[in-house]
Image (cartoon, rainbow, N blue to C red; front, side):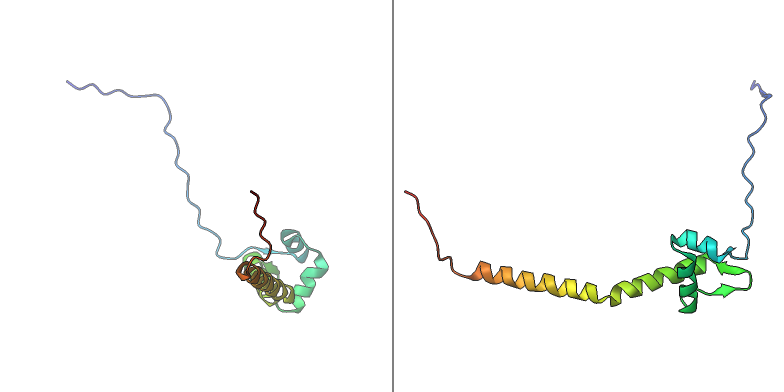
Length: 111
């Protein structure tokens, strides 16, 4: 015959899932500057350029972050320094290839 055993330990409670707020988190310009690790003045410049947009109660954190990342990617692609660096590497590669193809003039043979 099977015997049932009861325990006096309480059951472990499972975490209750809470619905996420539908309203995105908004922050002040100063808090956004801390989040971006920049100055408050720079946040104002980004707002003036349309990179980020202020809502009535502040800046939407997620939207501002995405907008700022896209802005940084565009700046990197358009940078004249990036193009100059690429041209320099290409020229160096061509010079090295020409040196490798040139016949060797000086051969020293030790006997």
